[in-house]
Amino acid sequence: MNHKTMKQKLEFAAKDKLYVSIAGVLFLIVTGYISYDYLTPEWKEYQSEFSDVVAEKFGEERAATIPAGLQQIYVKDLNLSDRCITCHQAVEWKGLENGHNPYKTHPAAILKSHPLEKFGCTTCHSGQGYATDMNSAHGFSEHWEDPLLGKELSEFYVVSNKSAMMQVNCNKCHRFDKETKGMDVINRAKQLVNEKGCRACHVVNGRGGTVGPDLTFEGEKSPEQFSFERVKGFASMFTWHTAHFKNPKELVGETIMPNFGFTSNDAQALALLVMSWKKTKLPVEYIPSNNFKDVPTTEEMEKEERMKNGPGAFFVQKRCFVCHSVSSLGVEAAAQIGPDLAMAVEDVQSRFGRTLDDFLMKPTGTMEVVLSTMLPLTKEERLEAIDKLRNAYELKKKEKLAVKK
Image (tube, rainbow, N blue to C red; front, side, top):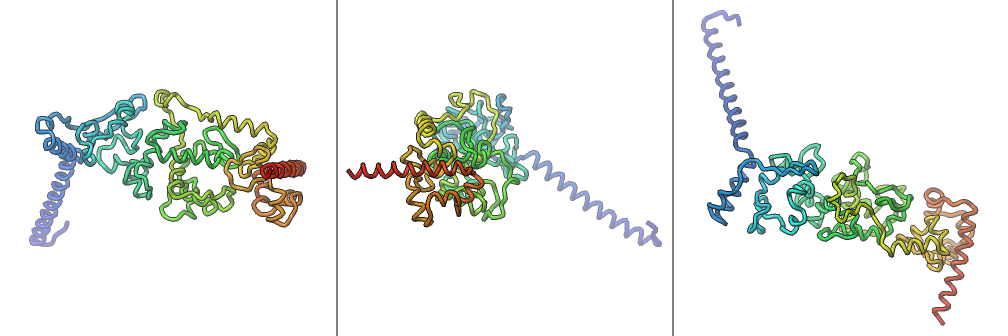
């Protein structure tokens, strides 16, 4: 700079030295902090604390056997690298079953059937297995879609059963099991799928009707494929599915899916089940009993054949049985939503003040929507339906008379 006097030059030099000194001190502080953080990572603190826990409970000699440094499980068959055991060193230790994480023994029964060397950690628990700090490892970081399926996430979503979230991953291998020990929430959801006849409208695992969307790989969808305009609270796929199961029309106004009156627990169970329906590439040995197909039970197949080939086959072929039974013709509704059509001759007259013939040819309300969009019937098919329903009504009356006698 161009200084006029020696005094100004000296003052500038003094200030310059001060600024340089401050900058140097700040540089040393930042360098020191980075060096300290690098030399004392979070996982070292956990290992040190675990060593203290072991020394206190089992003695110094036992504590000396604990491996130090980064630990890793590599599962070649799954191309999986998990470093979770760097902090969770007590996983296979006996005697720390009542401890707290990360110094707690993993339930032995589960590890016996799911050994670490074959499954790793994130296969079941999710999270980022290769991370070495807690937040990243647990997956609560931006742009990571597989956070740890544990207590923290369950509380965030207000899931009553704290182990329910992890059952989503259990179903990757046990998808085609009718029931799996330790998967109470998913088992309940599978039971509901059968009880409510979801396959009457939806294809699930390659079987079912086409009235509604195919749900076989529903879990593959991304959040961008859902509309959260009507979702109350946090916008996520889990909250969307839960709200949709509780009240379908509240989220999708044009849907014909009925309200089954699910409890919050059942709606959450079904939400977790459909989120587990993803495409997986697992070696054959990971699938129990090599069960790669959803096979109906003998009872289900017998019932299906009986209805398809029986006197009520017309109502099965036209998908009327999705909502309605025709009891006198051996047709049992998949979802038990609508009234028994064996009594349609009387019901239509009492409900709408119209004859069955008139109503089916010119329906109103829900039936107008269903018969014009989801289950369209030609004029000839409607006349056939009327004839068969009149026959079903006569058979029903005879059944009632026989019971009275």
